[in-house]
Structure formats: structure tokens, C-alpha cells
Image (cartoon, helix red, strand yellow):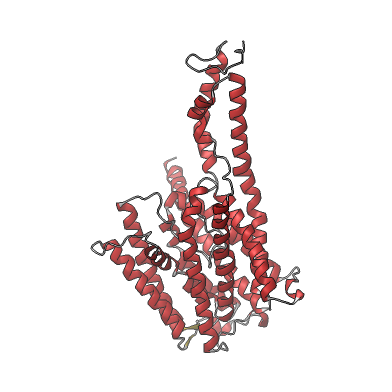
Length: 440
């Protein structure tokens, strides 16, 4: 029995690790499949539209079930309780206020917040990332995406949402980590270097349509792709800084916010595609790699990852989740060499190594900061699987939050209602509504 108990505890404690490792494989698969689709001629503008349309269709039902319908059910329960037992609204509010979390109203300021979030995430970030991926390689793109925590730190300092105290080691670690990360990115951008052959690459012969011709890519295209990736990461870090305000409004409705951002982002991406692509044929999609790329990105990296990362972050914190991002880069490098015959350059390896060192330095500083102080309005730690989790950007809490609160509320509600039903008249001390007779 003791062995079974220790084994079950080990499996329970290992779930977050297995979950994050599985997600890294999912993210790596998205990078590879997307690269194959782009190599076969799919427009990245169209891919962004289809990806977020699918993500909206997948996330919206869960938002309706877990948030809107549940909120209305709780609201209806309050009205029925108030009508049947003549309990005043003031008393009901006292007992049930924390359960009545109705959907936030979409005012003009709230709409503008969602509009800007959609513009930064699904439109700017995704399009520039895919464009950069097209000109470079999956491994290079994954390495660049590890700059996200450092860029978010810089943006937070610029907007005075992060305070720097150079006398403290944690601030020094974040600053040094940011500098090392930027140095790694510059090295990867400006220095390509010789090709580093993998041991197994000589014996692999992938399909011609899958091959990533990085050796034939000109230095000009490589530099252009690097700039696109940096712009994408900058847009994503800006999103993390600006979403703090939106999360205050949608504190208990992250799924609804994600659905709205995906939906508005889809509309914006359609408008951008109409401007950039003038051939109707670019919208054509069949049962091929293009459909797989859009569906995979929309379902896996923009839907499933949201839920899984939310659970992991709730249990282990955002630093734990972010620490696994370099693993994706390694998986992509191995998968890319097998599937795409991708060539890895010395500059990319050295730059990636510097970026990973800078990443963990920044994360260490953030971890120490959270141990010293707790700020409920602190910027959410950026968690980015593949260039963005598409719109798994709001991985702050999982969708089970309301269920937990309802479970906690059941004893209090049952005791309160049982007491009220056992009395022939209204409860002592509870005001009876005017112009109503007490029920027998």
C-alpha cells in the first residue's frame, strides 16, 4: 500500500512536467507543419485568418458553457431565492455576491482594449512571425521567440510598470539577462556562420516539398526574416504589457476575452489579407497540408494549450511554465533536421545559447522578486510556446475557477436554504419585502 501511495504521489507531482513537455512537442509540431505549408505556397496572411477562425470556433463554446451560462444560472438562482423566501436584495448580496460574476459589459473603452489586443496578437505578431519563419527556419524562429521575457521586461520598464533597484541582485539578474538575450539575438541576425552537420543528417532524404532550403537563402532574406521575428516578439511583449488593463475587466472571464480577441483578430486579419493579397486563389484550401496547418495551430496551440497552461500556471506558477520554452527549440532542431533537412548554422547555435542563458537569468530574477513581494496587478509572466501561443496569451487562470468557487459555496447555500425552508415565517432578523405576505 505504501508503494502504491508513493507511486500515486509521484504521478500526481509529475503531471505538470509531463504536461509542459507534451506542450513543447505540440508547439514544435506547429512550427514544422507551418513551415511545410509555407514552403508549399500558402499565404501566411490567409493562414492567420484560418487559424484564428478555427480558434474562435473551438474556444467560444467553452466560454459560453463555463462562463456565460454559469453566470446566468447563478443569477437566476439568486432571483428565485429572493422571490420564494422574501429575503431582501441586501441580504442576498451579503451571502451570494461573490457568486454573481456576470459577463462584463463591452463599453467603448473595453472594445478598444480588445481591438488593440487583437491587432497586436493575431495580426501583427502572427503575420510577422510567419513571414520571418518563411525567410529563416523553424529552429531559428523558436530561438528568437525565447526573447519574449526579456522584451516584456524592457517594455514594462519603459511604461514604468516595472521598478529597477540596481542594489538588488534580482534586478541585476534581469538587466544582465536582458542584455545577454539581446546580444544573442543580434548575433543570430548578423552572423550566420558555417553549417553544422548533424550526425544523422547525411542519411535522411525527406520529400522535396518538405525541404527547408536555408543554405540557398540569401543573407538579405535571412536578415529580413530576423527583423520580422524581432518585430513579432516585440508586438507580443507589448500585448502582455497592455493586457493588464483588460484582465482587470475580464478577471473571471478569460475564456470570453480570448474568444473575443480571436474573433476580432480574425476580422482584422481578413481586412489585412484583402489589402495584401489580390488573387482569390490564395483563399483556396482543401484536405491538404494547408488545412492541417491552420487546424493544428488553431486547435492545439490556440485552444488546448490555453487550458493546459492555465492549469500548470495555477499549480506551479508562470516561471515554471516559461522555463520549458528552450526545450521546444531543441525538439524543433531535431524534428527539422529529420523532416525538413534543415541546416543549422554556427551563429544560430551560439546565439541560441546566449538567449537561453539570458532567459533563465530573467526568469530567476522574476522568481526572486515574487518571493520577496506580491503585487496583484503585476504584469502576467509571458508564456510563449511557438511564437505565440496564438492566443493562448491569457494563460492566467484555468477555466475551472468558477467551479471551485461553486463547490465551496454549496455548504453555505444548502444550510442557508434549509434553515429558511424549515421556518413557517420569514427568518428572524431578515426583512420581509413590502406588499408581500409570508408563505406558510
